Each structure stands twice: as C-alpha cells, then as structure tokens.
Image (tube, rainbow, N blue to C red; front, side, top):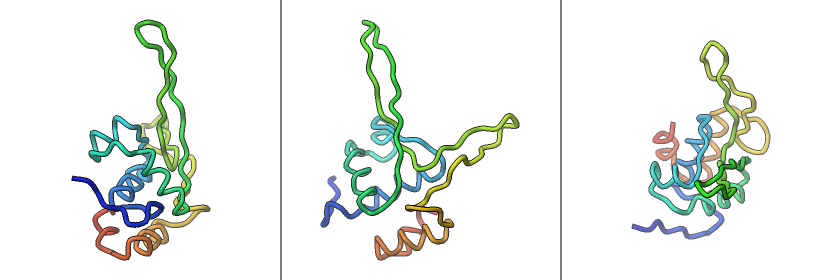
Length: 124
C-alpha cells in the first residue's frame, strides 16, 4: 500500500513516527527504515521533515567491502545520545524544532502539522 501525500512538503503520519523514533535518541538508516517502518523513502521523509522546520542531522558511516572497495551509508538523527560509564543514556543535545523546546511544545507542533491529537498520543 502506498501512502498518499497531498502536499509533498507536509510530513505524513509515517514521517512523524520516524521523527519520534529519532527523538528517542535513535539513529535511522535506509535498512532500519525498511525493517521498522516498511518504507524505502527515507530520504523523502527527511526532506519533508526538514521542510516542515525540524532539525535533522546525519553522519556518514564508512566501511570496506570484501573486495576492499570503500563504501558508506548515511545515518540520520535529531539528537545525539551517548552512554555514560554507569550505563545510563545522556543527551548531548536536544533539538526538537529549530531551537530548544519542551516535549509538550514538540507535541503541539506535531498536532498543528497533522491536525490530530490522536497521532501525538500514539507517538508518545
């Protein structure tokens, strides 16, 4: 099933779920997006989220194939979470939307974008 997007610059419900996944401190790449969210359009999702004003970072991960050829893949994230020596996750940076806002403000922004509070309740 394909997801209809009326305005190509408006995030879909799936885009917002991917955004919520990244805001939990997770990183996502194309393979993870396919496995978790059943989408091959991660780049399009990132494009729509950025056009909506969300700050999304990326990091290129390099590796070598069996033949010694250098390749890379891209991981996307909204905040970088590291693990402290005690094993607890700590936020290095929390950016919900062009500047620092609380989770409540972030939820209000999603509600405004989607026009539905039930999507926000599902995400959080």
